Structure formats: structure tokens, C-alpha cells
Image 1 (tube, one colour):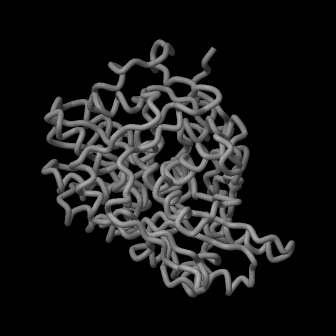
Image 2 (spheres, rainbow, N blue to C red; image 1 turned 120 degrees about the vertical axis):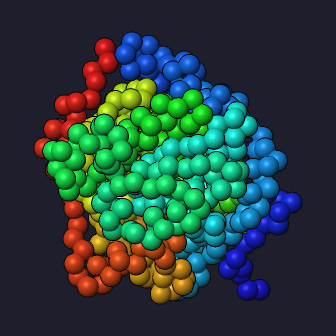
Length: 453
């Protein structure tokens, strides 16, 4: 019997609840803190930037949260997404391992980001909000929010990290097609942006800076709120539909993963895939190794400190306990623009600190080498971000080749690379170089991290 390549669910099998891992953790995660008093933050501390429903989800300890019907209606434009068995990549690598990838590039924006953009916009619309501001790196989140705002009739204003704004102009075009107003960050629009440009007119920007600009604009208007594309609990919650679908799909072929790998920048793609499997591991139903994969140029888990820090550079957000390189850290303009955040999601940081998941960092040339192997065998050109998970999956598959072990490897291909071809061109022309983050750079950025007694 021929083994399936594409494992599908029909619309009636799509999960109708998101999973909140907080309910099943052996220790509760540390709470966010008020930036002034350093006391545990309350819902009121978030009310200027988020609607009440999302604040409730952020602080929820309920195991499952129902997905609203209108959100499910939009999800059905592309969900359930397919799970593929990478037979051709396995053959290329001559490995006994089985490699599966959950493909999120089928969404309208071409990535996993609409999984949270759609509910965030819907909840804001229910509370009378008419405009959302946000930041974006590579542009996948910004385009997803613009798409979701178009579905529910809200305005969107987006600050894109300047290095990515210049390198990926077609992402800006996508955002504008869906009605988004896009600025390079730092920008002339905000006081904070103008201050940075006065120091360096060619400032490359960072996600922390772009967050500061978006938040500062949101708090000026009672009809405007801010939307975040990763990091926070409610964002990772919305992404768990990825892992919930993958569990159902693997059950159709009678398989469970021995190793799960996911790229980690802010943590939403990784958490979305991994948390439902971690639930099953904690229940004793399976025992996969769960591994975060990050870039060597921005290694928050493998080199960052587990500290309370701001989510943005200007210090406008509550303090979050997370693995951080320091909110003032300006990462090198690597091609995986979505993995250039100074901190890791508090929930991902917490499960890593508990020893429930592992973490490794991989240089970008190895990632792009793996991406070419993947594209030439499986046909899909991956976005730069998931190339890190692909590289880790290839490492694991080649180890199986050496040992003869027949492991099952699972990852999420969180987006396609159709608008990232300039990155591939640089790799194939030999212009791409690996970037390692020195301890001195980290130490300098960490000097600004608050000391919490």
C-alpha cells in the first residue's frame, strides 16, 4: 500500500477550540509586572492597548477556549491546513526517518500569522475598535493583520522594521493591497522614531522599536488598539489550532512524533505546533523530544538570560519574565526577519526553563542549504524563518541514517518564501554570511534590563 503524502481533514473535522497550556503546566508561569511598581500586572494595565476579551485570554487558566463562529468562518478560507509526509526529502537524504510538515503557507497571507490576526481583529471589532496598529519584521504578520482587518472592516497601521522594509518591498505592497498603512521603523511618525533617526538616519530598526512606535500611536486614540503577532499568551493560544489539527492528522495514519522541531523567534509558530503535543506528553500519551530552533544571530533561548524585561525598546509595555537579549538589542539584519526579536514568548521561556523543551541555534547558511534541499525535493520554497526548523529536521534525519533509527520527525512549515527570493539569491550567489552574536554585544544590551528584586 502506498503511504499517504498529503493528510487532510475536512471542514467538519477542524478543531473548534484553542488549547491553553497554562492549565496543564506543573508550575504556573511568572506573571507580567507593572513597569512602575513591579507588582503583578492587572487587566487594567493592558486595557489601553488590548480589548477586554483578549486580556481575559491572556490571563486565562481555562484549558480550552471556544473559537467564535465568525472566526471559524474566516478560518475556513484555508483551514484545515494540510499535513505532508516529505517522502521525496526522505529519499534525497537516504534516511529511515519519517518527516512530516504541517504547511501553513496555504493561508491568504502565506503564513501561520492569520491564525491569530483573525481572532484579534474580530474581538477588537466586537468592542467597537475601528483601527489597529502593529509592528512587523519580515512582513508576514503585518500582511496578516491587514488581511484580517479587511475581513472585518477595520483600519490597520503598520510599522515595519526598516531593514526588512527596504529588503522586502513586496510585503509592503501586500499590506497596502489589503488597506494597510505602512511605515518603515524607526519612522518620522512618532517622537521615539524621530529621536532614533536623528542619531542614525539609516537606522536598521528592530521589532522592539517598531512595537514602541505602534503602541505609542495606539494609546493616543480610544478607538485604536494595538495587536501583537507573537510572544503573548493569547497569541500562542490562537496558534494551537496548528498542533490540534496535526494531532488529528497523524492519528489518521497511526503515527506519533519522536522529535518535534519548530523555528522560534517570538514563539507563536513553535507554541502553536508544540503545545498540544506537549499536553499529550505531560499526560503520558506520547514522549517526543520537543526542540526550539533559533538563529545564531538572535539566540534568545541559547544565549539570553531568563529575566523580567520590556517587550519593547521604549519601555511602554508591562515587564515579562522571558529569555531576553535585552530590549535595546539591535539584531543583525539576517534574512529571517521574523526571528529578530530580542525576547522569547514567556510561555515558551517557561517550558524551556522547566526542562520540558530543548533549544538549539543554527546559522543561516546551513538553514538555506537545507531550504534548497527541501525546495528541490518537496517543491515548496520555504520562508527564511522555517528554514531553521527544516535544517534541524535534516540534522535529525541524517543522524537516523547513521544510527539506523526509524524516528518520526514533525515540524511546521509556517510560510512560503515567494516574497523572499532576494534572500535565496544572496545565498546561491555566495554573498550570504553567518552571523554569531558575541557575548560583549549581549552584555551591553543587558545593562538596560530592569533589576527586579
